[in-house]
Structures are given as C-alpha cells and as structure tokens.
Length: 201
Image (cartoon, rainbow, N blue to C red; front, side):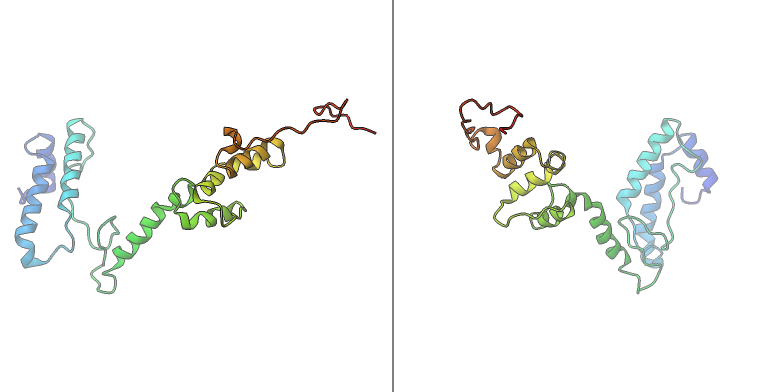
C-alpha cells in the first residue's frame, strides 16, 4: 500500500477498498520498522494519528470528506504542533515545545484564577485587589470566596439597607439570612412612627 500514489489512495478510500485507519497503520508500521536506519522522524504520535484516521473514515462514510480526507501526512519539523516537540532540526530549539506547553497550560488555566470558587487560596487577596477589596486577615477563605462571588450584588446595593444586610450576611456566613445575626428593632419614642419619613422640628 505504501507504493500507491496519493491519487490512488484517494480513489481506494472513496471506493472503500481500504480505510484510512488501514493506510495510516501501514505507514506507522513502516516507520517503526525502518526509521531506526533513516532517522527521518523526530516525533511520532501513533495514537493521535489513528484517532484522526478513524474520524476521517466516519466523515467519508457520511459523505462529508474533502479531497484529502483520510490521507496521512507527515509534518516538517518547522510547524508548531500542540503537544509535539518542534525543534526545526536545531539543538538550540529542542526544548521549544516544552517551554511553550507550560505557557499554554497557564493561559488555558487562567479562568481558574478569576473564579471565586476555584481560585487557589493564596490568590484570593490578589483577586480581591482587582475589584478594590482588601480582606481582613482574620476572614476565613470560605468567607472571602463568598464575598468575591457576591461582589456584583454588593456593588449594586452599596450604600443601601439591602446592601448592608447582604454584606453582614456574607461576613457572618449567612447569619443574617439564617436569623443568628438578627438584631431587635429599637423601640421608637411614644407617638413617633419609626417608618415615617417625617422628622421632628
């Protein structure tokens, strides 16, 4: 099969003479058997290649394949490929993939540091600093997470009675909502309605 041209492989795939998985496995077997003599490949990901071939077979079966669907290829060592070393044949760049993978992992995990529920505990103060919140050192981590999660509502109701109740509820771990933080309403002087907006002159 390895002697077939690309045109012959395309024809054979379309006519179901063989599958992309079979073609890919043939090439992988030859690489495994002969590359020790030629040293042509720096990295070979057989698992990913076979998975891609299986996906190609499904596309072809559904009639959604393009001209080269199912044809295995080998990338030259100058194209950055996720999870693969890219050295451009240079010893100086041999660790390029390793460095970039670490940076890519950090970028991919950036959302963890902006979510109050998942941000690591040592970074809670850092996240609070983004919204101008300075936590009391004695405030437990769980309360800090609650405060950050409720920050939009706290900002919305800032300076209001509702905002104060919410702030106290967060600070007490639900004490206001649960009743343990309730305070008795002061008794108004005789003849004065405490809910009235009128003031004594």
